Length: 263
Image (cartoon, rainbow, N blue to C red; front, side, top):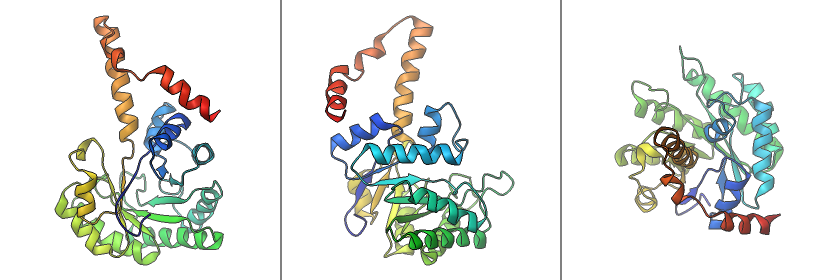
């Protein structure tokens, strides 16, 4: 799927949304750490490793589609521990997984570059040892942690992650066509994933495909869209005593029919 063209990898946050995305005809899915965390009443990054692994397994087992696991920073700092945790994720049956360089340390939000590269090498080694062919995505979080020069940082790191064995490269937060093109050219011929969410909703599949992007994910975008509708409806009920937002809800009969077929 990464070799030619451009495909959308949407992100469900539970079994029901995974089944519906499969029903619509998407060819692959990816978990969303933020979407799942919000559904559990937690901030992004606060879901512990074993809970995330159980969620990833749940999505994998719910659908016949290949699933990419959003595995954050591997839930550890040290490369050898990244390898051990990646093995656990591979054992969940994923077709792909991502490892990011966000350290979760406000004082130094990105891992030092050499350490970040070694973490990707460790993930690559664990996948190779598994002989599963799982697709490894190397993520640079420069935009999301407000790096002072996110493009330069992303270009340097993504090139290094590609050299270290990442199959696909990803810098969530990039949004301008020129910057996307620079990333695509820097890591070519390896494929690039671009995140499209509220901040970059003006981008389209055809436009990104023309820029050379191979894969598009929406991260927490669908979960936030659902939360937005819920929040607006709940606030209208509480504040105005009105129920107008409920008029555009999904039809329960349609969902019952879909899920009855799956049960």
